[in-house]
Image (cartoon, one colour):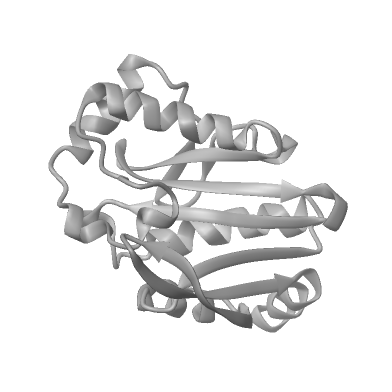
Length: 194
């Protein structure tokens, strides 16, 4: 676990929490996700096959899987707004290249287009560059996910390139966009905002 990401974090509107994968926490998440529609999660297959668990046990299994993926060099945050679960954000730190990779973020449908993804990202970006002293942060999205592309551009990311037909989602191939932001770019942004 990354030292600076091992505790719960707060932004203006959000709380990013670490949740133990247990039946109580799984129930809290499942009570929200059981009312969601699969069509609203078409690009999340990059994270796992079905982002919407069909039962309490599947929700618990999903939480355990997230923890397993993150146990060596990452962390999982569950995003809360007004004490209600609204999404998940996962990230990984690669010490040898001093890079923080934002592996995924997904929000429930009712929490989208409200700036929550950007707000959670800015909070973590600040910690990555100012506390962790990361040299670089990265993110990836499929080209069809225009919201993710707009978010990356609005946050000042540089498009490193497009890997053609490198993601297979339900038997259909998609191009992936690879983005990065360097510590020097973040510092320059911070100076121009003052």
